[in-house]
Image (cartoon, rainbow, N blue to C red; front, side):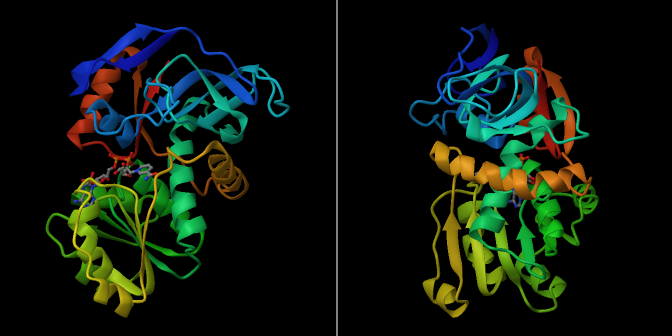
Length: 325
Ligand SMILES: NC(=O)c1ccc[n+]([C@@H]2O[C@H](COP(=O)([O-])OP(=O)(O)OC[C@H]3O[C@@H](n4cnc5c(N)ncnc54)[C@H](OP(=O)(O)O)[C@@H]3O)[C@@H](O)[C@H]2O)c1
């Protein structure tokens, strides 16, 4: 089968199309004939040599795919061969076939083209597990989402709105803020020239953020705590601004606040299956009702994967980028 591998660490030039053996569906696994794979920042970090696949995971990049079921491993009684599905992976998505534990497979939402469903698993599972299952956001909460125009940000905005909370986003330009508004952002803050702590207070009528979904890390640590309301939760899921910062514990205590950090990729299969099951129960009906949509903004054929990475690196993109087979 055709697949993409990284020939060393570096820029998009290290992407190489190669011929690899087709995987087989092991016990408890589903073999998917891939229609499309979603790009994620983790793929770029892996390409640069900063994010090695967890032990046992494929060296082929790609954390999510959509496609059709090609074969079922022993013990799998969900899904039929030929069914349209999408899946959350630990790796291996940039390829024509991938085998994945059945607990990480979801049906393609009714009414959605199979290709577009590749944009859903990573962002829905990341956002739902962090904001709903962990930070426990509820109706009426104020939620600050950093990077509102990105893949994670567009889904976070929609799911925050869907639970009846108030999504406020940061983004790097006025046009990106407008884009965020089209997903339901109640307000946008341009992080390049506005103080998000001050703006978050004003926008929320002096309350602050009940939760912050952060993709920046160290560079925002202090300001994120200052942006929190009493009892607020800071959930760090990205480190684009570094990993080591100074935390004012006095401020944390006086806010009665919590700092949480998570990664999805390295979690055990059983934990991923629990998240996927919650997403199927709570998020899929929203997608099927049209309340939540996949923010697919660009598609590149597999052989142009390096170009897709170049575009991702440019930072000009919004929403999700897909590789199609
Ligand atoms: N921990 C986990 O399990 C997990 C899972 C999935 C993703 N992630 C992380 O989530 C982040 C988003 O991933 P993605 O795939 O959605 O990437 P993406 O589409 O490229 O989004 C990156 C976003 O970061 C924003 N950003 C960059 N610098 C910023 C700053 N100083 N202030 C505010 N926003 C800033 C960008 O905003 P502009 O474009 O407006 O400049 C962009 O919206 C990444 O850091 C990724 O590693 C973590």
